[in-house]
Image (cartoon, rainbow, N blue to C red; front, side, top):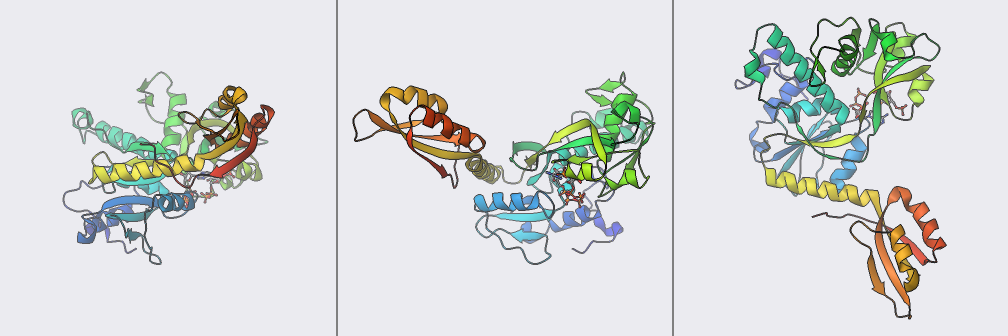
Amino acid sequence: MDIAPESQCFPEHREPGLFLNPNDLQAVAMTELTHSPSLQDRMLFAVPKKGRLNQAALNLLEGADIQFRREHRLDIALVKNLPIALIFLPAADIPTFVGEGQCDLGITGLDQVQEHDAYVRATARARRLSGEIKPEEIDGKTPGCEVVMELGFGSCKLQVQAPEKGQYNCTNDLVGKNIGTSFVRLAEEHFARLEHEDDEKDGVPTGGKLRTKIIQLSGSVEAACALGVADGIVDLVESGETMRACGLKAIDTVMESTAILIKSRSPRNPELLDLIASRIGGVITAQKYVLCQYNIERSRLAEATKITPGKRAATVTPLDEDGWCAVSAMVAQKSIALVMDELTRVGATDVLVLSIANSRNS
Ligand SMILES: Nc1ncnc2c1ncn2[C@@H]1O[C@H](COP(=O)(O)OP(=O)(O)OP(=O)(O)O)[C@@H](O)[C@H]1O
Ligand SMILES: O=P(O)(O)OC[C@H]1O[C@H](OP(=O)(O)OP(=O)(O)O)[C@H](O)[C@@H]1O
């Protein structure tokens, strides 16, 4: 995508840099795009363009019957069957777009949303301290986006890590040292909490200058300790493989994250947004559950339905054979093997497990 020179980037109605990260030039160029006439009547849906969340997000769109064709290297795709445009963005920029209302809906990680919120807090604090804005000008405003639902993928932890064989065994040991991270604001707040324990408002440190030096890195953060750039790092851990391969150990958890659907606080088309959220909710339910069917003697039905209570209740149908019935119930995918063992134990026969293609909760 072409990026406009900085002087042309800001539409007149926007206050430059209020909520954008310093490296958000691409975001600003996109702001211009979202005002283009072909997009104006469409709900804008921000989707991770690459990385860990990309494929799972595309699968959700497919499950929700959001049909589009993305031209090679184009970051905008018009949805064929709904008045929606998909905007493909780095996961880290999506909270900015949705939080500022440029996009109505977005898929990203909770970690990215919290980093953005921490950035907004830090920026507001700095502007207040410098006298640029008065406290009453920001109080009452709720910046940022709203979480619609967790999406059931992209689970990981943002952890403080230190060399396995080093002298740092807890976060306190790293206070005053060099920390490499791409989650600069969350790391700052985490260390500020330790440095200024008595000086917090609403869980956010208000105290003075940070002694710990937070070094911004944009990738391969785990290499920072081995290369002598940092004493410790704050980075994402899922299996722990990357961490261990780099000779690091986790010594603290800043937050747990998962992929989430977020929405703007003033979406363009709330009805369409609710419809899409409901479709996505249905796809997630379908992915989480399977349908379990079996036959059971009526005398053992109570035992069996205790094992498969269903989401609301199990469906019980009489069979032609006297004293027998058929049961059908949704069961969490992750516990299906145990459930089948238990059903067999209480005498269920012909146990079948069927996958659910889609579902709708309301
Ligand atoms: N190992 C992981 N397991 C599960 N989810 C992860 C993992 N790493 C990252 N995520 C989630 O995916 C989001 C995007 O991370 P990812 O590293 O894929 O970003 P990216 O857009 O490719 O950027 P980068 O170029 O910095 O890698 C993270 O914010 C986090 O929510
Ligand atoms: O605990 P693990 O399962 O090993 O996963 C953790 C790694 O995954 C993420 O990076 P990613 O591989 O997405 O690439 P990046 O370093 O370029 O961000 C994260 O930044 C870690 O490096």
